[in-house]
Image (cartoon, rainbow over all chains, first blue to last red; front, side):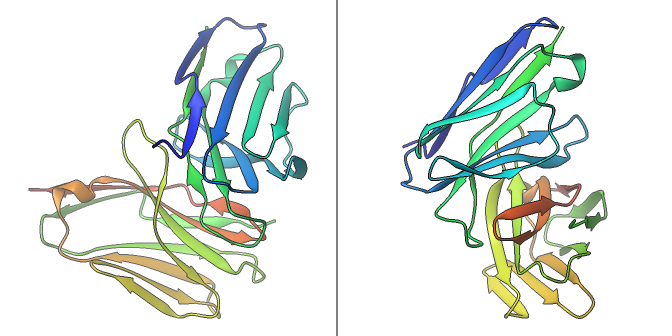
Length: 113
Length: 110
């Protein structure tokens, strides 16, 4: 059973387009995250939601908009895609807001042409 | 904000040898320190973690040590196997705001 699943796994699109990445977790966790991993493998947190409420919002361009319709889903919408947005985006979840292990999906590789 | 440094960036060992990866953190308030293993094409997977009230933790061939005074923590893998080859990340966290090190690419040669 997949715990944290992201779709699509690969996304190739042109500069200027708008795209969405979906994430779902079936672990019953309250907190979900989006991370960006660049070409040098550096992992950086972008957003965190707890029970559909935004709790961490790093310095991310406002072209990135997370949406959490319920606590099992956290989607990421990106407007006006730029070359620098090319990266692997990981969704993760954890049981709560106290320090607990985060479970990661397998990532979405976004390539901007 | 928290800054985590990780060394070395690459590490190559012979099968059966030990591997050690070291991290330092800047924010003394950080109180949770997980280690993740990332294999090619996969997301990071937790392999061991330690909290600030503990100095050492061991799970079979993997151990982690934490020195709060010096603000550094280390991952030790003994009796390495080829399947241990991967990228390893340390992280420091306060209230689920997790900051990662830059990663160590470990290669275990058979």
